[in-house]
Image 1 (spheres, rainbow, N blue to C red):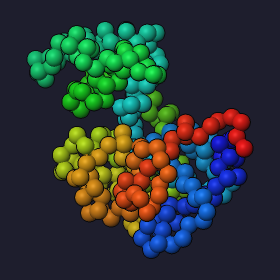
Image 2 (image 1 turned 90 degrees about the vertical axis):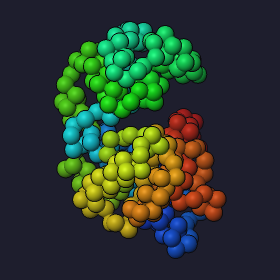
Image 3 (image 1 turned 90 degrees about the horizontal axis):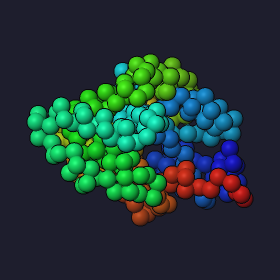
Image 4 (image 1 turned 180 degrees about the horizontal axis):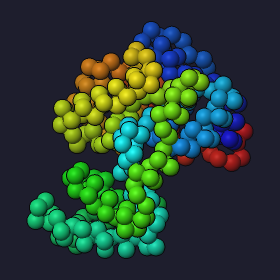
Length: 283
């Protein structure tokens, strides 16, 4: 609330349509323009964010993972978050991961557990070595199919709730999203399965983005207003080519900077995280 108060006092909220108009037709934007974007499709966005934006007359731009809605699947990084939250200590998760990897080592030609830990476990400002190891291994290191098998097993062991039941409670459904669209909210493309696009083949990237495009078009998105946020903030040249082929107008990265339209390509627009805006003592 205080962050919205701060932004509303010091900036002028714009819509995605205004942004696209500025990119394509050099239409002028107001002084100090700001656009609100939200990754993922948490139910909190419907229950708390949407009513507040609607009350203030502000458009929010939401980018959902489609499989979470269509298939009641937990997104990988969300699943890892809840596994870590449910475990008493991260070392318990590490031990269970070792046990899982032992079952798949020959099939996937995996390094020994100690070598994997040594190469990935680097303590960060926010996370212990164990947590860094868990995140890097499951998000970056293992093949996607193996990651899905390991994280599903970890989720069953530490969280102990059926994934589809958990997903129905965690995410918005299509009825709620359509309600938001009818009331002026915008929904763009994040991807179907929230996969790292730079690790996929060109064909896999096209499939990932096209399925997500089909979903948002069915929600009522104007095909002339397609925008994308990159899962995990990563992409490559194939991604940029595919975005052009599917009629994308703009894409947002995870770089924290002002999106100067004279400086950045429309497919590489930076954006600030909510954590970059102070939450107290706002003027």
